[in-house]
Length: 340
Image (cartoon, one colour):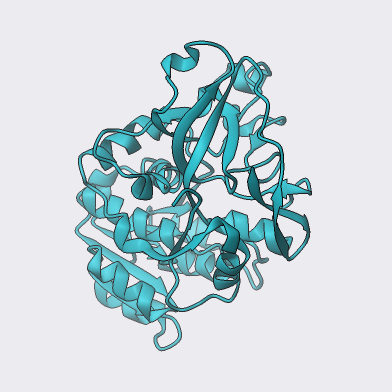
């Protein structure tokens, strides 16, 4: 089978590799669509640790192509499915206590083992979920990101949130914004640097946008929320985005840190913890959110397809990643069409 692999930082090659052999607890999936996530880009450019060589990718949709044992997980060959991006060992204390997300031996597709940017990928049966009828492979490739965003939003008591700010109008930030509006938040403002993404935010229901290259966010946001935002979310993965969330939160408000912040905080003044007494939530992964995510997609409550801006065949995976690495201002969700 063909697979998009990284042997050294910055270089993606398409290779012929064997179709994975299954253990009794594993499922083989024929990949249809794979989405490029910021974590995948980090594996390529070296700022996200990975065991090289590795096949890229952890967000995808496909069909069951093989079962390690008959009737595993109640699935049949040909069924449309997605897989979670990782899973715990299942036997350590953390896993037994429901904390597989923090398992020290956690397997991560595209990082600790081969991922989904290949014609076939094998996964643990515990990670597989059926795609509901009416949900396309194109929509389902985004399930992991939706589930991660949902877990972040679920940390908030939305009955207490009238105004929210999202820093970072990438794929995850736009999903968070949609979920906030779906949860009844009166005003949601998106903060970013690319006009195309900010225009998308408005098209998907945001009440206002701020372009950091032209406007001072604190000044603009005060017009929306004079006392600060009830719930700023950091989804850009930048130190400046986190500082913006800290500056913009109201007293007794809540901050959700969704992005994996790559930079260091400089000139950080922790006195805001005393002065504002905010609650700060970290949010990692999608544990427990997949059934609700599938239901949201089945009921057509989230807009996924408008965010898909670029498509490439598997053979052109390197070109697809270059679009992401170059920060193409028109790019949002880049999809690899593994099966035409």
